[in-house]
Length: 321
Image 1 (spheres, one colour):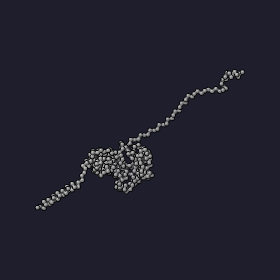
Image 2: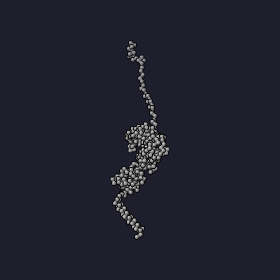
Image 3: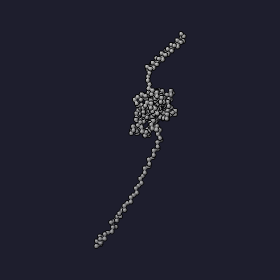
Image 4: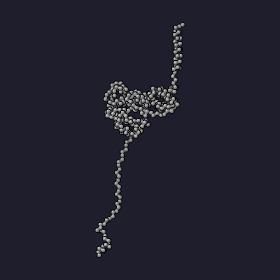
Protein backbone atom coordinates (compact mmCIF):
# COMPACT_ATOMS: atom_id res chain seq x y z
CA UNK A 1 0.00 0.00 0.00
CA UNK A 2 1.21 3.46 -0.82
CA UNK A 3 2.78 5.25 2.16
CA UNK A 4 1.00 8.48 1.29
CA UNK A 5 -2.38 6.73 1.27
CA UNK A 6 -1.66 5.18 4.66
CA UNK A 7 -0.78 8.59 6.09
CA UNK A 8 -3.99 10.11 4.72
CA UNK A 9 -6.07 7.29 6.23
CA UNK A 10 -4.38 7.66 9.62
CA UNK A 11 -4.88 11.43 9.65
CA UNK A 12 -8.51 11.00 8.65
CA UNK A 13 -9.13 8.54 11.48
CA UNK A 14 -7.41 10.82 13.98
CA UNK A 15 -9.49 13.76 12.77
CA UNK A 16 -12.69 11.77 12.99
CA UNK A 17 -11.94 10.57 16.51
CA UNK A 18 -11.02 14.14 17.58
CA UNK A 19 -14.24 15.49 16.14
CA UNK A 20 -16.28 12.91 18.03
CA UNK A 21 -14.43 13.69 21.26
CA UNK A 22 -14.96 17.44 20.84
CA UNK A 23 -18.65 16.91 20.06
CA UNK A 24 -19.17 14.80 23.16
CA UNK A 25 -17.20 17.32 25.28
CA UNK A 26 -19.29 20.23 23.98
CA UNK A 27 -22.44 18.40 24.95
CA UNK A 28 -21.09 17.37 28.31
CA UNK A 29 -19.73 20.76 29.34
CA UNK A 30 -22.17 22.97 27.46
CA UNK A 31 -23.28 26.10 29.29
CA UNK A 32 -26.80 27.18 28.50
CA UNK A 33 -27.27 30.88 27.89
CA UNK A 34 -30.58 32.64 27.99
CA UNK A 35 -31.35 33.78 24.43
CA UNK A 36 -32.69 37.04 25.85
CA UNK A 37 -29.14 38.09 26.74
CA UNK A 38 -28.28 38.31 23.06
CA UNK A 39 -31.50 40.16 22.31
CA UNK A 40 -30.84 42.71 25.07
CA UNK A 41 -27.23 43.10 24.00
CA UNK A 42 -28.30 43.92 20.45
CA UNK A 43 -30.36 46.95 21.51
CA UNK A 44 -27.57 48.37 23.69
CA UNK A 45 -25.28 51.04 22.17
CA UNK A 46 -22.20 48.78 22.50
CA UNK A 47 -20.17 51.65 23.92
CA UNK A 48 -18.67 49.37 26.60
CA UNK A 49 -18.09 52.48 28.71
CA UNK A 50 -18.73 50.85 32.06
CA UNK A 51 -21.12 53.60 33.11
CA UNK A 52 -23.69 50.97 34.09
CA UNK A 53 -21.26 49.46 36.59
CA UNK A 54 -20.78 46.22 34.63
CA UNK A 55 -17.93 45.03 32.38
CA UNK A 56 -19.24 46.11 29.02
CA UNK A 57 -22.62 45.85 27.34
CA UNK A 58 -22.68 42.03 27.45
CA UNK A 59 -22.24 42.10 31.22
CA UNK A 60 -25.04 44.65 31.53
CA UNK A 61 -27.31 42.49 29.34
CA UNK A 62 -26.68 39.50 31.62
CA UNK A 63 -27.47 41.64 34.66
CA UNK A 64 -30.75 42.78 33.12
CA UNK A 65 -31.85 39.23 32.34
CA UNK A 66 -30.94 38.13 35.85
CA UNK A 67 -32.85 41.05 37.35
CA UNK A 68 -35.85 40.12 35.20
CA UNK A 69 -36.17 36.90 37.19
CA UNK A 70 -37.04 39.03 40.20
CA UNK A 71 -39.36 41.17 38.11
CA UNK A 72 -37.58 44.47 38.75
CA UNK A 73 -35.09 46.52 36.71
CA UNK A 74 -34.66 49.27 39.28
CA UNK A 75 -31.05 50.25 39.79
CA UNK A 76 -30.10 49.32 36.24
CA UNK A 77 -29.53 52.08 33.74
CA UNK A 78 -27.68 52.42 30.47
CA UNK A 79 -26.28 55.94 30.62
CA UNK A 80 -25.38 56.36 26.92
CA UNK A 81 -28.65 54.85 25.73
CA UNK A 82 -30.83 56.64 28.22
CA UNK A 83 -34.52 56.05 28.78
CA UNK A 84 -35.20 55.00 25.17
CA UNK A 85 -32.82 52.03 25.35
CA UNK A 86 -34.06 50.97 28.78
CA UNK A 87 -37.62 50.90 27.46
CA UNK A 88 -36.51 48.53 24.68
CA UNK A 89 -34.79 46.31 27.22
CA UNK A 90 -37.93 46.28 29.34
CA UNK A 91 -40.06 45.29 26.35
CA UNK A 92 -37.78 42.33 25.61
CA UNK A 93 -37.94 41.15 29.20
CA UNK A 94 -41.65 41.89 29.59
CA UNK A 95 -41.17 44.37 32.41
CA UNK A 96 -41.85 48.00 33.11
CA UNK A 97 -39.04 50.43 33.71
CA UNK A 98 -39.22 53.61 35.74
CA UNK A 99 -37.77 56.79 34.33
CA UNK A 100 -34.26 57.45 35.62
CA UNK A 101 -33.07 61.00 36.11
CA UNK A 102 -30.37 61.73 33.53
CA UNK A 103 -27.01 62.77 34.90
CA UNK A 104 -24.25 64.99 33.63
CA UNK A 105 -20.61 65.40 34.56
CA UNK A 106 -19.44 68.56 36.32
CA UNK A 107 -15.82 69.61 36.82
CA UNK A 108 -15.66 70.92 40.40
CA UNK A 109 -12.72 73.24 39.82
CA UNK A 110 -12.43 76.75 38.42
CA UNK A 111 -8.80 77.34 39.35
CA UNK A 112 -7.65 78.90 36.12
CA UNK A 113 -4.16 80.30 35.63
CA UNK A 114 -5.38 83.74 36.76
CA UNK A 115 -6.62 82.62 40.17
CA UNK A 116 -4.34 79.64 40.76
CA UNK A 117 -0.82 80.62 39.65
CA UNK A 118 1.44 77.89 38.35
CA UNK A 119 4.64 77.80 40.38
CA UNK A 120 6.48 74.95 38.67
CA UNK A 121 6.54 73.27 35.27
CA UNK A 122 5.98 69.54 35.08
CA UNK A 123 8.39 68.00 32.58
CA UNK A 124 7.11 64.48 32.25
CA UNK A 125 4.43 62.30 30.75
CA UNK A 126 1.21 64.17 29.98
CA UNK A 127 -0.95 62.14 32.31
CA UNK A 128 -2.99 63.33 35.28
CA UNK A 129 -2.44 60.03 37.06
CA UNK A 130 1.34 60.15 36.69
CA UNK A 131 1.53 63.81 37.63
CA UNK A 132 -0.63 63.23 40.70
CA UNK A 133 1.56 60.33 41.82
CA UNK A 134 4.76 62.34 41.53
CA UNK A 135 3.60 65.43 43.41
CA UNK A 136 1.00 68.17 43.65
CA UNK A 137 1.36 69.17 40.02
CA UNK A 138 2.24 72.62 38.79
CA UNK A 139 0.29 74.49 41.48
CA UNK A 140 0.16 74.47 45.26
CA UNK A 141 -3.38 73.07 45.25
CA UNK A 142 -3.34 69.30 45.59
CA UNK A 143 -7.08 68.97 44.95
CA UNK A 144 -7.58 70.87 41.70
CA UNK A 145 -7.74 69.85 38.05
CA UNK A 146 -4.35 68.90 36.62
CA UNK A 147 -5.35 69.62 33.05
CA UNK A 148 -3.50 66.74 31.36
CA UNK A 149 -6.64 65.29 29.77
CA UNK A 150 -7.03 61.79 31.22
CA UNK A 151 -10.77 62.48 31.37
CA UNK A 152 -10.87 63.51 27.72
CA UNK A 153 -9.10 60.31 26.69
CA UNK A 154 -11.56 58.21 28.68
CA UNK A 155 -14.66 59.85 27.17
CA UNK A 156 -15.95 57.92 24.16
CA UNK A 157 -18.39 60.64 23.15
CA UNK A 158 -16.11 63.68 22.92
CA UNK A 159 -18.06 65.42 25.68
CA UNK A 160 -15.09 66.66 27.73
CA UNK A 161 -11.92 68.49 26.77
CA UNK A 162 -9.19 70.58 28.37
CA UNK A 163 -9.24 74.30 27.65
CA UNK A 164 -5.65 75.17 26.63
CA UNK A 165 -6.01 78.71 27.95
CA UNK A 166 -7.31 77.86 31.42
CA UNK A 167 -5.83 74.35 31.77
CA UNK A 168 -9.19 73.22 33.18
CA UNK A 169 -11.39 70.42 31.84
CA UNK A 170 -14.73 71.54 30.42
CA UNK A 171 -17.87 69.46 29.79
CA UNK A 172 -20.11 69.80 26.75
CA UNK A 173 -23.51 68.98 28.25
CA UNK A 174 -25.07 68.41 24.84
CA UNK A 175 -22.74 65.43 24.29
CA UNK A 176 -22.41 64.13 27.84
CA UNK A 177 -24.25 60.85 28.46
CA UNK A 178 -23.47 60.62 32.16
CA UNK A 179 -21.56 57.36 31.78
CA UNK A 180 -19.04 58.39 34.44
CA UNK A 181 -15.93 57.29 32.55
CA UNK A 182 -14.33 60.71 33.03
CA UNK A 183 -15.03 60.65 36.77
CA UNK A 184 -13.35 57.26 37.09
CA UNK A 185 -10.32 58.44 35.12
CA UNK A 186 -9.74 61.54 37.27
CA UNK A 187 -7.17 60.71 39.99
CA UNK A 188 -8.29 63.63 42.17
CA UNK A 189 -12.05 63.02 42.01
CA UNK A 190 -12.59 66.51 40.64
CA UNK A 191 -15.35 65.34 38.28
CA UNK A 192 -18.76 64.50 39.75
CA UNK A 193 -21.95 63.13 38.22
CA UNK A 194 -25.05 65.07 39.27
CA UNK A 195 -28.66 65.09 38.03
CA UNK A 196 -29.12 67.12 34.88
CA UNK A 197 -31.84 69.14 36.54
CA UNK A 198 -34.93 70.81 35.07
CA UNK A 199 -33.99 72.79 31.97
CA UNK A 200 -30.38 71.72 32.64
CA UNK A 201 -30.27 74.07 35.62
CA UNK A 202 -28.08 73.23 38.57
CA UNK A 203 -26.20 74.85 41.45
CA UNK A 204 -22.78 73.40 42.21
CA UNK A 205 -19.83 74.08 44.50
CA UNK A 206 -17.02 74.38 41.95
CA UNK A 207 -14.22 73.53 44.33
CA UNK A 208 -12.60 70.37 45.63
CA UNK A 209 -10.08 71.96 48.02
CA UNK A 210 -10.22 70.41 51.50
CA UNK A 211 -7.54 72.55 53.15
CA UNK A 212 -8.38 75.00 55.90
CA UNK A 213 -9.45 78.53 55.04
CA UNK A 214 -6.11 80.33 55.33
CA UNK A 215 -4.24 77.76 53.28
CA UNK A 216 -7.03 77.38 50.73
CA UNK A 217 -7.06 81.16 50.25
CA UNK A 218 -3.34 81.13 49.55
CA UNK A 219 -3.64 78.30 47.05
CA UNK A 220 -6.55 79.65 45.01
CA UNK A 221 -8.50 82.90 44.91
CA UNK A 222 -11.84 81.17 44.28
CA UNK A 223 -11.50 78.22 46.65
CA UNK A 224 -14.09 77.22 49.21
CA UNK A 225 -12.86 78.15 52.69
CA UNK A 226 -15.56 76.36 54.67
CA UNK A 227 -16.97 79.56 56.16
CA UNK A 228 -20.46 78.06 56.40
CA UNK A 229 -22.39 81.09 55.13
CA UNK A 230 -24.05 78.96 52.46
CA UNK A 231 -25.10 76.43 55.09
CA UNK A 232 -26.74 79.12 57.21
CA UNK A 233 -28.66 80.67 54.33
CA UNK A 234 -29.98 77.20 53.38
CA UNK A 235 -30.99 76.14 56.89
CA UNK A 236 -34.62 75.80 55.82
CA UNK A 237 -33.98 73.10 53.21
CA UNK A 238 -30.69 71.71 54.58
CA UNK A 239 -29.42 71.15 51.06
CA UNK A 240 -25.84 72.19 51.88
CA UNK A 241 -23.53 70.35 54.22
CA UNK A 242 -20.04 71.22 55.36
CA UNK A 243 -17.39 68.55 55.78
CA UNK A 244 -13.60 68.46 55.56
CA UNK A 245 -13.57 72.26 55.13
CA UNK A 246 -15.63 71.97 51.95
CA UNK A 247 -19.29 72.70 51.20
CA UNK A 248 -21.35 70.27 49.17
CA UNK A 249 -24.83 70.70 47.71
CA UNK A 250 -27.32 67.81 47.69
CA UNK A 251 -29.10 68.13 44.31
CA UNK A 252 -32.10 66.19 45.61
CA UNK A 253 -32.75 68.81 48.31
CA UNK A 254 -31.65 71.93 46.44
CA UNK A 255 -34.56 74.26 45.54
CA UNK A 256 -32.32 76.35 43.24
CA UNK A 257 -33.10 79.60 45.01
CA UNK A 258 -29.45 80.62 44.41
CA UNK A 259 -29.15 82.35 47.76
CA UNK A 260 -26.00 80.38 48.48
CA UNK A 261 -24.43 81.76 45.32
CA UNK A 262 -25.13 85.29 46.49
CA UNK A 263 -23.65 84.90 49.97
CA UNK A 264 -20.50 82.98 49.01
CA UNK A 265 -17.63 85.43 49.61
CA UNK A 266 -15.28 83.47 47.34
CA UNK A 267 -17.47 82.90 44.32
CA UNK A 268 -17.03 79.14 44.72
CA UNK A 269 -20.72 78.39 44.11
CA UNK A 270 -22.01 78.70 40.55
CA UNK A 271 -25.46 78.36 39.01
CA UNK A 272 -25.66 76.94 35.49
CA UNK A 273 -28.17 77.66 32.71
CA UNK A 274 -30.24 80.17 34.67
CA UNK A 275 -31.59 83.35 33.04
CA UNK A 276 -29.80 86.56 33.95
CA UNK A 277 -30.85 88.04 37.24
CA UNK A 278 -33.22 90.96 37.07
CA UNK A 279 -31.80 94.15 38.48
CA UNK A 280 -33.17 94.90 41.88
CA UNK A 281 -35.68 97.74 41.86
CA UNK A 282 -34.64 100.74 43.91
CA UNK A 283 -36.72 101.38 46.97
CA UNK A 284 -39.01 104.40 46.46
CA UNK A 285 -38.05 107.49 48.38
CA UNK A 286 -39.94 108.05 51.59
CA UNK A 287 -42.87 110.42 51.05
CA UNK A 288 -43.01 113.22 53.59
CA UNK A 289 -46.51 113.59 54.90
CA UNK A 290 -48.00 117.00 54.14
CA UNK A 291 -48.83 119.04 57.22
CA UNK A 292 -52.45 118.86 58.10
CA UNK A 293 -54.32 122.16 57.57
CA UNK A 294 -55.12 123.91 60.78
CA UNK A 295 -58.74 123.40 61.66
CA UNK A 296 -60.90 126.47 61.86
CA UNK A 297 -60.56 127.74 65.38
CA UNK A 298 -63.73 128.30 67.28
CA UNK A 299 -64.49 132.02 67.72
CA UNK A 300 -63.09 133.16 70.99
CA UNK A 301 -65.42 134.89 73.38
CA UNK A 302 -64.54 138.55 73.72
CA UNK A 303 -63.69 139.28 77.28
CA UNK A 304 -64.56 142.79 78.33
CA UNK A 305 -62.51 144.20 81.18
CA UNK A 306 -64.42 144.80 84.35
CA UNK A 307 -63.75 148.52 84.20
CA UNK A 308 -65.33 148.73 80.77
CA UNK A 309 -68.42 146.65 81.59
CA UNK A 310 -71.63 148.79 81.86
CA UNK A 311 -73.04 148.86 85.37
CA UNK A 312 -76.46 147.53 86.03
CA UNK A 313 -79.09 150.38 86.08
CA UNK A 314 -80.50 149.36 89.47
CA UNK A 315 -77.11 149.36 91.08
CA UNK A 316 -76.40 152.70 89.38
CA UNK A 317 -79.50 154.36 90.88
CA UNK A 318 -78.73 153.02 94.32
CA UNK A 319 -75.34 154.56 94.11
CA UNK A 320 -76.78 157.91 93.10
CA UNK A 321 -79.10 157.98 96.12
